[in-house]
Length: 330
Image 1 (spheres, rainbow, N blue to C red):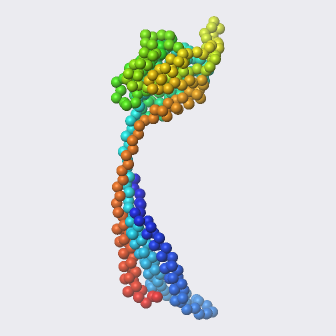
Image 2 (cartoon, helix red, strand yellow):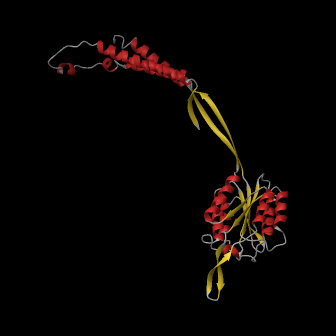
Image 3 (cartoon, rainbow, N blue to C red):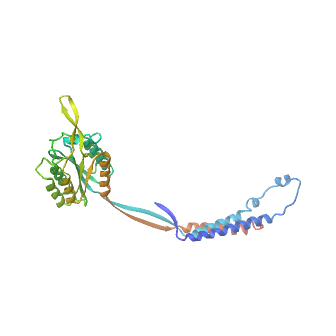
């Protein structure tokens, strides 16, 4: 990007000298013409006008332009071309999402699972530089999407998630261990797991704290989110007459989720409604900003020569006209 700057802008104050020069010329021109009273000026208007009439003010115009361009040249105009190199270091993130049947509770709109999918999708959209993967778990765990920068594919896979895809239950340890396995070979300097669940660990061969120790050994931070209101929540239950809603107690082991986060250098959050869940992801987004290094370069070129030549040109024109065709003009 090119721009003009002046190394010595204080010289522009010399342009103030043009004000008395122009005032002096106007006053001199007015006094140089005698006035007489006549009954009509028709005869004067009909008189032919020579080229000197049209050029009578050319001398002062050339002088003003010469001074203006010389002052600009003294101010040393410089063109500056700036450009920059941007180095972006993305963060590798694996989202470990609980899809057990309890995630169908209606204390979130429309339910916990759909709310979690929507907010996670917004989070992914806001981090175009990062590689993000998706692990799901209930009674078992599998990778829905490996680490990728193709976020369109990842978002489409998010939309396909439904409760009941795998055996029911809550295997938090498996979900975390699977996410760690996806990150352990990553060369990124920052590796993160976002684990969201609404229940206690009741399935799987790996205990949650064992999986947390594994994450810690690989330098992987884990942010844990407990989702669910406090007290009771409406939950869809299949009956002989169809689906009915029953208020079920909301409880899960927050102490385990807190310990996982503390052990790995992450944080624990409790989401009690849709807005709180959005705020949690926004906070994680701020905590895990990509590293961006910007190096700026600039080159400057002197541009005074053109203005100096224009000033000299108008000065020569004034001198030439004053000593030739406009010699007798006052």
